[in-house]
Amino acid sequence: MDNYNIIKEIGKGSYGIVYLAKSKKSEREVIIKEVDLTSRIEKEKSKFMSGTMTENQMNQNIKKFQDIVYNEISVLQKLCNCLELQDKKCLEHMSCFIDSFKDQNKIYIVQNYIEGLTYSQFAKYLKTNYKKEDKTLKIFLLKSMIGITKSVKYIHDRGVVHLDIHDENIIVESSNNFILIDFGQACFLEEKYCLSYHTPTTEKHLIKFLKRVDLDLMGDMFQSILTIIYGRHWYRFFLGTDLEELLDSLITDEPPSLDEVIDRLEYIIKRFST
Image 1 (tube, rainbow, N blue to C red):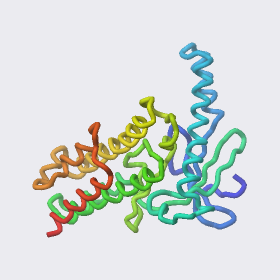
Image 2 (image 1 turned 135 degrees about the vertical axis):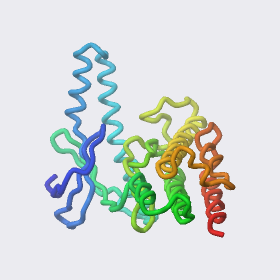
Image 3 (image 1 turned 90 degrees about the vertical axis):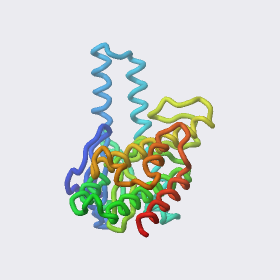
Image 4 (image 1 turned 180 degrees about the vertical axis):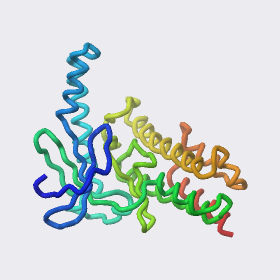
């Protein structure tokens, strides 16, 4: 941590603590995710000592946890590396990777700081500042769905699935980019396994399954956001459109393509814009 000054803790999850920090070299604000391997190992050892798991299970769980951390680093490096930024378009969809290092059995992942609201905060802002009947509110929500779908499509087109899409893992920038964050569960479609899911054994079914997980999570999130704003009968505010049918289709075994989702959302926006 010699190269960074910690400003404050901004988040905590099952895999570690997230800090806002400042680079001593560039003086830019960055995000640092700290993963404590020791605490995780001790947690698994405690389960083993209590007799709730075998030694083999303990070792497998420890290895799986370490694999998840290093997998996240690998995904970020390949998708959006600040140091080798060949495709700046990635910055419209995700936070870029800056550095990773290990210090006293803790692993640190450094990314550029994305300033904005989480998607849930964004929804609450809209709810506070617009009336339910306002067409502008509907258009903002539909455009947010398009932005998020485009970000998911960006990583899918590059062979990665996120697998942890929810309203706290999306940052809404002032430029109206919808940024995917926290790739701790992500994996490459080219791999024969995924670290967090029991998946079909054939490669063809695996790829289809993993993409479907992202669409399923995305569909659930969109409906939850609409419920926050409009209540459980949110679909009554979108009568004359196929939005309810479209969002329901995302959580089926045969969801539409992401291109189709974008096209249908854009068509609904036109309905409200006229």
